[in-house]
Length: 447
Ligand code: ADP
Image 1 (cartoon, rainbow, N blue to C red):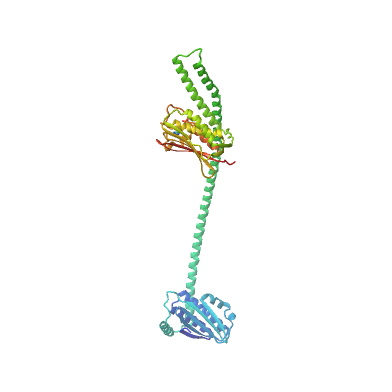
Image 2 (spheres, rainbow, N blue to C red):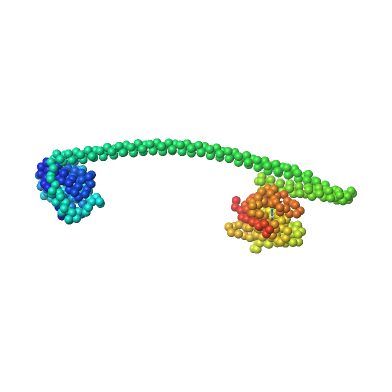
C-alpha cells in the first residue's frame, strides 16, 4: 500500500466536520489547488455522512502516490455500493478522479485525485515530512469548519456571479454581432439584387442591339446586292460601246479620241470588277451562296489554275510553280468556290511579287484535314496588318502594285467562302521575304 499521510476515525456526527477539515488540510499539503481541495473534502464528507447514517462508522486513512492523493474509508459493517452512493453522496463520483467500492465483510471506499503538474512529487522523504506537519496541526472545532465552509461558499457564489455577469456580457455581444451580421447580409442581398437587375437590363439591351445590328447588316447586304446588280448592266453596256467606237471601221477615231476611249474602257472595266466583287460578297454575306458539294480531285483544279494563270503571268522574273499533290488527293467540297479562292490568292501573289516564285501545293494533315498553301517571295505584309487585310476595302498602304489594281474585297470574300466550305484561311508573312496563305479544309465536312 502507498505510504500513509494521516489517519483518523469516523464515529460520531462531529467527526464529519473533522474529516472534511482533515481532507482539506491533506489536499492543501500535497499541493492541490483551492477548488480541488474543496472538491476532495466535500466528496469525503458526503461519503462519510452516508457511512455514519448506515453503519457504525469507518476508519479513514490518507495515502500518497508520487502524483496522486488517495483516501480510504473502511467501514465497520458491510454496506452495499448502491446504499452507500445514494443521496448527496452520489455526487462524489464527479468530485474525484477515481472512486472504487469493494464490498467483503466490510466495505472499502477508495477515492483519488491527481496532483496538478506544477505540484512537487510525493517522494518518500516528502511524505515523511508531510506526515509530521499534518500531525502537528490541531483539530479545529465544528464552528471553525462551518466558518471556513461558509467563506468557501461565499467565494464560490462570488465566482458564480462573476461568471454569470460575464456570460450576460458575452450574450449581449453575440446578439450585437448577430444584428450586425444580419444587417450586412440584408445590405449585401439588396446590392446583389440591384446588380442582378442591372445585369438583366444590360442583357436585354444587348439582345436588342444585336437584333438591330443584324438587321442593319442584312439591309447593307441587300443594298449592296441590289446596287451592284443594277450597275452591272449599264457598266457592261459602256464597255461594249467603247469597243464599238474603237473598232468601227466606218468612222475611225483620231489618236486623241482613241486614248480617251481607252481610258473610258479602262475605268469601266475597273468599275465592273468592283461591282462583281461587291455582288459576290453581298451574296456570301446574305447566305445566298449554296455550295454544290461533290468529290473534287485536286489535280484537276490545280491543272485548270495552272493553265489559266500561266496565260496571265507576264513577268519573266516570277516563276509559277503548281505542285500536283502526290498521292492524288480527293476532297468533298464545292469545286467552283474552291477554285475561285485559290485563283484569288494566286492572282494576289503574282500581283505583289516582283521577282522569285509563286507556288501552290496541297498536303493532307492530321485529323482528316487538308492544307492548301499559296506561297510567294513578294513584298510581304507587316505583322500588324495581317488580320486587317481580311477587312473589306482594306489595302496595305505603300505596297500598291503597279499598275494599281484591286478593290480590297478579294480576301474578305475568300475567307467567307472558305468558312462556308467548313475551313479556315490564315496568313503568315514577313515584309520583304514573302507571304504564305494557308487554307485548311476538312477532307469530308460533317453535316
Ligand atoms: P486587293 O488585292 O484587291 O487589293 P485583297 O482583299 O485581295 O484586295 O487584298 C487586300 C490587301 O492585302 C492587298 O491590297 C495587299 O495590300 C495585301 N495582300 C494581299 N495578298 C498579298 C500578297 N500575296 N502579298 C502581299 N500583300 C498582299
